[in-house]
Image (cartoon, rainbow, N blue to C red; front, side, top):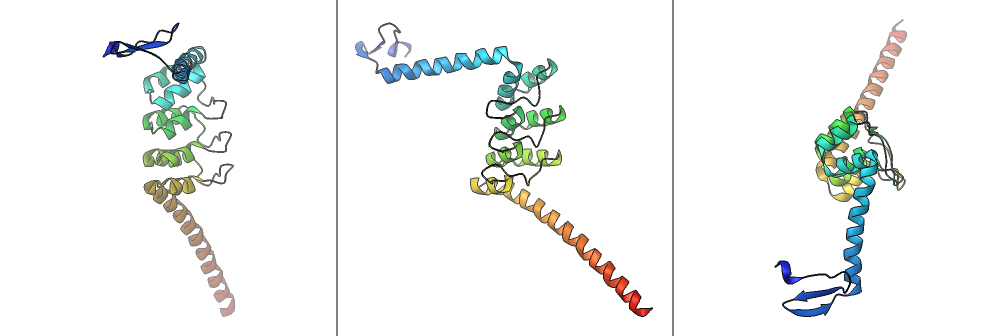
Length: 199
């Protein structure tokens, strides 16, 4: 099986069952692009602990995240697109990494260049436990991205019903709390009016 395809970078020929064929240029370019991308990402990560932290968080490598944070990597460092390590961990469903980053001071309401937050990213991926964790740590469910999307609208658009139900229940709770306060105030006003009329 190993000898089915041999790529000679000088002649760029393949051997398959003893028949020599020329590889299409597009295929060679794809192979080179993949290899270049892998080496470039590794080289950049090796030079910058913040980039390494973002990559480790996205991939769920908790030991690497702990080590990089201990070495002084910035928990709120971002990519060129404004994505933080917390956003990467949230969208890829890495619960333990999310918990660690938040405990180390990651900003739960930080926005990327599109206005998205870790909560919106978690709603996008449909991870209920991460959505719950972020909300418990103060993530604002009312934040809107530049396109107008909220965590709730994102969950609904992606068909993530469990996340949508959780976020709707929070909206319902806050609404009922507000209504409850208003109705209590109205009752107090009525009682005062009744007392004044009696006097």
